[in-house]
Image (cartoon, rainbow over all chains, first blue to last red; front, side):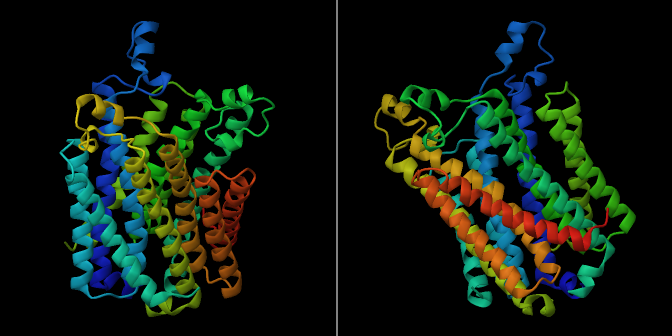
Length: 152
Length: 152
Length: 152
């Protein structure tokens, strides 16, 4: 275990994986923030601040800002989790530290750009490019893993 | 490998991670149960029990109970997967068994309370509190990981 | 680390986990393909090909083909990620190579059948069966893990 933990690549992977997962989790707070400020909820029990049944009903609605953050969060789930899984397997193949760092930094950077592009609705192709860079990094690591470990 | 597998913290992590993932998977069955009993489906090929085209069309609808379970399942994905990833890295840093157990038990307990609060629509803040406890545990482990492994 | 990486079961797990995660990621491209060909987008900044504001508005719509792929992708998230997590823990318990290969192949095969059934809207129970086979495999590995590592 000491070997795994002491490898510089594993320490770097742990750092970047933790940071990007924390970024993903922060979307929950952003959703909660928009739900409360926009008064747009999905569950009746969340509308307890309403004084009248009409107000209660009005608060159960879909809001564009909330939906935008939720789509961004969903995109994180679809891209960050594959990065973490493939990145762990990639790390265990013992790649060069510099190559690994390039992959990790590029991915984490691209996801921060992606979130900014999404939440601030920046003009395309900012979001599309940051998304494709992230997929490219994960794809490159997956290719590296398969060339080394392939056992069907 | 024997070292990793034999560590008490790793065994505890494996146990709690497996239990909470199984809990998450059980939401699929609850969704299927509500879809069948409420006759509310999302795909035309799922309405094969319908006798007439009108009945078929009527079964393609959104149902509140189904959507509630699906939101609960989505919240599981957004919270339990980060716990598993960060929890694994946390376990590999070799924490004290008692501290680790406190984290794992608190998280898994909070997610069971969260599911009950969500599916039974218990009054707030039961769901909000159980959600924040889970995030707190994962955040605490993430902080611990970053203080030990940080390599940017 | 060399021990972990050199075990045949771990190499097989890495191979199948990478393949099934790549399959999951391919759903993103299928969604993008359907969004572009069906001209059905979720974000205003994605409708930049529209020439008039009316056309722009018309392109912000829900399309059945897009939604079908998104449901399939969601089902992948709900099933493939538990497989990867439980599969990793299962691999670390040191199972027989033949038994492990049976689990991995059955799961990955069932998910490819599931995707085909879903995207091509094949008549039930093709999708239901492939879904339940995948859950059965993950459940069997979870049972194996719990019988070996259980530490509550």
